[in-house]
Structure formats: C-alpha cells, structure tokens
Image 1 (spheres, rainbow, N blue to C red):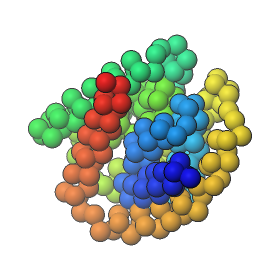
Image 2 (image 1 turned 180 degrees about the horizontal axis):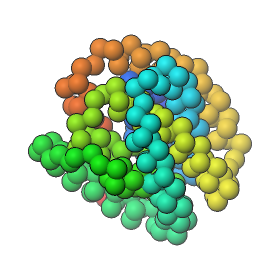
Image 3 (image 1 turned 90 degrees about the horizontal axis):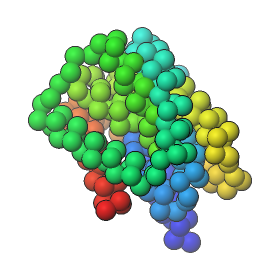
Amino acid sequence: MESIFLFSFIILVASILQTSTGFGFSIIATPLLLLIFEPREAIQINLVISLIISCALIYKIRHDVDLGIVKRFGWGSVFGLPVGTVIFLLIDVEVLTLIISVTILLLTILLMMRFRLKQTNHRDYIAGGFSGAFTTSIGMPGPPILLYFSSTNTSKETLRATTLAFYLFIYMISLIIQVVAAGTSKQIWIASAWSLPLVVIGLITGQILFKRINQVLFQKLTYGLLLFTGIYLLIEQL
C-alpha cells in the first residue's frame, strides 16, 4: 500500500512539473521510482509516461517550438543514444550515477554564478548528444538540455515547447532501444496504464501553473530541480 501511495505521489508531482516547465518529469520521477522498481523498470516507466505527456501537450504549444534547435538536438542524440545504451549495459550504474551527480552540481553552481554560453548550432548538437546518452543510460534526458538552455537564457516558452518537441523523438527512440536491448515486463506497462488518471490531473494543474510562473521564478525553479537531482543522486550513492 505504501508503494502505491508513493508511486501516485511521484507521478502526480512529476507530471505537474513536466507540464509547467517542460523538463520536470524525468528529473524528479527517475530517482524516486528507483525506490520502488528495478532500474530497467523505473527507466522504462519514465520513458512511457514522459512520451504520453509530450504527445498530449505538443499541439497546444507548437507555435513556441524552435524547429531548428529540435532538429540539431535530434541529430546529436542519434550519436548519444547508442553510447548511453553501451554505458547502461557495461558500466556499473552506481559509478555512473556518482559521476553524473557531481557533474550536475558543479554545472548548476556555475550557472548560479552567472556563467553563460552563446547558443550555436555546434553546441546544439553537443547538447543533444549528451541528452541522448543520458536517456538510454539513466533515463534522464533533461539535465543536459536544461543546463544548456539555462546557460543561454532561453525564454520559458521556448524552453518548454522545444524540450517537449525533442522529447517526442528521443523518448520514442530510447524506449525502443531499451525494450530491444534490456527487455521489458508486464509490470512496466500495467504501472504506466494505472498512472494515466494522475497524468491527466498533472497536465491540467501544470498548465495553470505555467501561466502564473514568470521568467525569474522559472529560472529559480530550474536551478532548484537541478540541485535536487544532483544532491539526491550523490547522497544515494554515498
């Protein structure tokens, strides 16, 4: 019973964040779902639900999507996805998670100290590549994209829409790769189907919150989520 309540809470909160920010689901859900499921199950549940949310939102926010960046992210991720799969299958997950947690914390601190980058086509490809590798290795494509967009001062509308459009591609490809390479289970699809009512509530609530969040608050929320991710993953391994 406790697991059911925890699962419901995770899905609801993560769905609200994904809808209101464009990147919250995998950052919050993946580490917390690992408290209930095995790594393969947690990652695939995250991929399925995130894909559903992206499909539900993309038509409404399509006018804010930067298609050029989405295409470059996509091409970059084509190279990152197989790399992440190899990492997932061959490298110890605890070591990988520790390295990623420290990297996220260091980069977030740099952003909070006003470190900034200029957005370029070349850097778009690199960010997409890292996102692809993160997706198939730990099921979290958000941190590389979020760190990149934050460093370039991208508006909250463009960030949310462009990220969700990119997720449509990368989540679908990643899910196929995960199922083929690592297999799947009935429990994954039952849990994903059971979460749909909570996802609908999250979609409605997140849309309301997005209209009330200004750019400054959005940026603070971004930093908060990145710090949470890095600290949680670090503590989990130590």
